[in-house]
Length: 220
Image 1 (cartoon, rainbow, N blue to C red):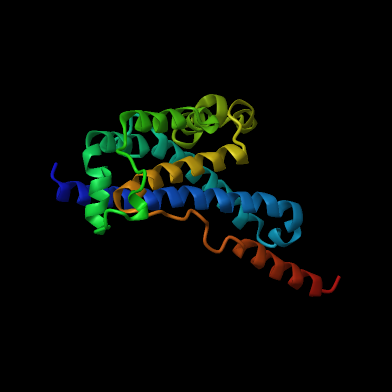
Image 2 (image 1 turned 120 degrees about the horizontal axis):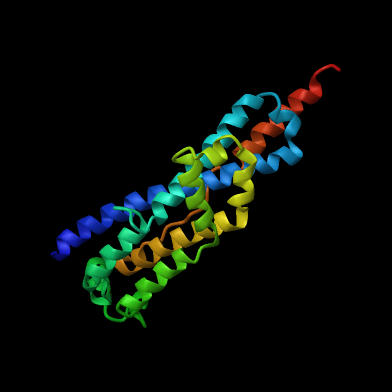
């Protein structure tokens, strides 16, 4: 693969993964917002209970399926496939290639102390994914319910929460790992770093605050 071919494929891969990682992270944030607002805006949410129930269920399915797709070690795409692509073409992420792409002078701060990506570094990223606390339960949920119906969980939804619990911390750590891995190689490519903050994170709270004020104005 030539430099130009690598650059084209890397940029396509990076942009697509950026969008999919954001989809996962944004879904986790909004899903958490709905859960948390049940504690302080429940009356306002009950103005449209069916809507919030549908959105909550849809977001959970998105979170499970997207985490599974992005972390699937045998998948044709996703982060493992991306790491294999990087491993096979490491030479195009050498510091001198970064310097070439950005036309940096020899003494540029981005080049100081920067070393060639090694196979060990790539393998460490693979192991970091494999060690994620959420990964096992995400796969159970995907295989047994969200991707396919298993009779054990089809008729007993509470059992899924017992057998494959999903905690906020684990989901958020998984998103952090996704973003960190993509940013690591993006930085080596052209110095680009993405922010993973969710845009308009307070939208739901604002809407429910307005709904709460409307409720307060209603006569008893």
